[in-house]
Image 1 (cartoon, helix red, strand yellow):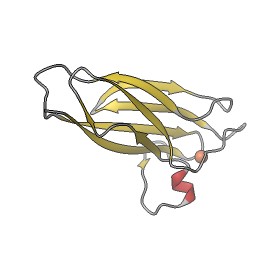
Image 2 (image 1 turned 90 degrees about the vertical axis):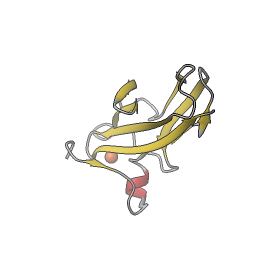
Image 3 (image 1 turned 30 degrees about the horizontal axis):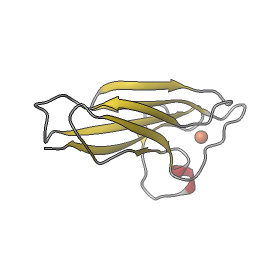
Amino acid sequence: MSGHVQTLKEGTDFEKKHVPIIECKDEIAVNELYEVKVHTDGVPHPMEDGHFIQYIELRIGELTVYRGSMTQYVKPEISVVLKAPSEGHEGLKMTLKAFMFCNLHGLWTYEKEITIKK
Ligand SMILES: [Fe+2]
């Protein structure tokens, strides 16, 4: 199952406890430090022996910028501060991608586009 990446389709509680939602600003300024949080959409995933989130990964496009390994003793969410691109990137759109991996139910993903202010 881990070779198959899933995302929100029907909004069931099963999906909501596996799909990582990205929480951050829609627009950032050049060189701005901005916080990105990744967590599930209001339905907590169990963190117990035999069933837990093993990692959360955050990418900008295809570039991995953060990866947090987890066990059943960790709350499955991350908060990371990123730095926006430098001058010359005004107007650029970037796609943030989050991945959440459940040891039983595989890999789940979500995308959010953010824009560098002009
Ligand atoms: Fe699961």
